[in-house]
Length: 118
Image (tube, rainbow, N blue to C red):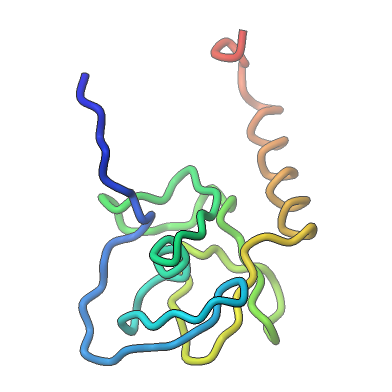
């Protein structure tokens, strides 16, 4: 078995001429337009929980663990499918997000045979 040592940023790298600056958890970052919030966060060293997101697949946001809050917007979008936008302020770790993520995991576990946990 081979151990993969490369960082998986959760979404594919985007190449674009236009750059976008945003704020994630109080830190400013500039990334190519079209980059996902998840990838921008990972480039900052901020890890966002994920199950379905990987560099090797197009993002589809089905696990709902990578939810984030964006200042001034309603809801909690999936960071893997939400592209960055100029000037947005993203929060990746709040008590509300922790509660939502916990609820999502509880739903997964409630329908899981749990054989692997014993």
